[in-house]
Length: 519
Image 1 (cartoon, one colour):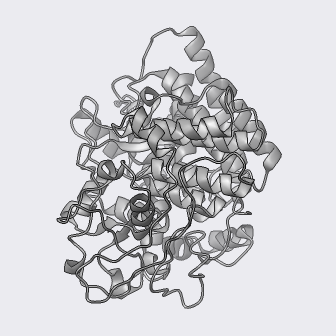
Image 2 (cartoon, rainbow, N blue to C red):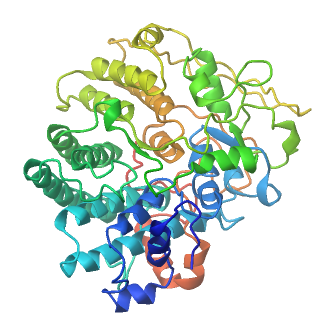
Image 3 (cartoon, rainbow, N blue to C red):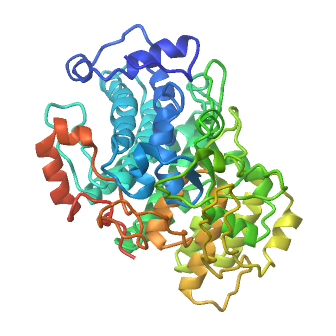
């Protein structure tokens, strides 16, 4: 049974029951754990829905996020060459069992708790509104997992036969579930006044369903934009519906996971950079933010001894850790809230939609772009005046200079010439680069979304890794497009993996594009 370091008090016992890997109990006894308030499974799901926070230490987070999305998205880079240099950051995706972890987090941490709530809802033990929140959390979880692997076994989870489904099917079913949850939440918000039945077990919004409704619509907008190059009409429909129903617009609406009552949340990134000493500022964000003289640098990272902010190239297959420890670390403490979705990200989503002439509400591409930067500055304690000055800057990203103590330097040319200043006369592609580059900065340190947006749009232009250990399976310039299916699935579900590869439409390598990766 899985020990959960990050939850204390009565919640711990309930979550330990919920997170067991004993799937037989879920399949054969839907009325199990009668003595536990089933609403507590909401807490269980929250702890791993977006960022893995419930393992002992930060090991799951490190393998599922830090050595994948954080590195692939250009935010952070490892200070040691794991597994003799053959691991995810050097594109040897089969060299370790890291590819097991995102799948395991989704299907042994989160989804069993959802299944308990599904059974309880079916039996009348959980109300519609509580299950609607569980559905939103399920969508957040499976969107992340599908954006890592592609096809997933979803619709028949908990049944004896649970086949893989294509990413298109997964996404479209998630939209259906999300829409149903949104309708329930809209009805509850309209008729239930200020009631907060989940107040004690909700570490995100403390049971405020108005906020959950905004998050659900914002997730719908995020997913709609994710599919806009493969299903443009459907993307526009869902995006416009989401904005019409109300998305996150203000800092007060931001979705972050943090300690609440007896629920204790510790940001796992702190343990990775501080206790493990395994990660530092990445070269790509170094080049962009230093080149822009970005005032948010001090909010995102801690300065080096020389007062500057310095990172390192990702993908070194040989390195002496001590040479890189004096580089900038994330400005993240144990109590820093874990970011799920911010108002700034939503504003940039609307900017992209407005650029395409979608109805994103009152505003246009430039006004939403400016709003996104202003919100990001406010989210990091900076003034509107500072944001407005930044928005007039014509600074470009800088070349990356290796400031480590290593005798071997891995410098890189500046990755782009895009500036913060908006130019209404630019073509659509340059506008997109500007929107996504600023969105990418604003989303820090949500590396999974950064990586997904890089794959979807090609922006920001991420500095390539140094040593490619994929034996030709992944292009250094194209970079990783997906994670290979888990080794555990090859061992325990070989026929299922064969079906998944057929649905993927390409080899099970990091070079195969996902369904939505069509730009």
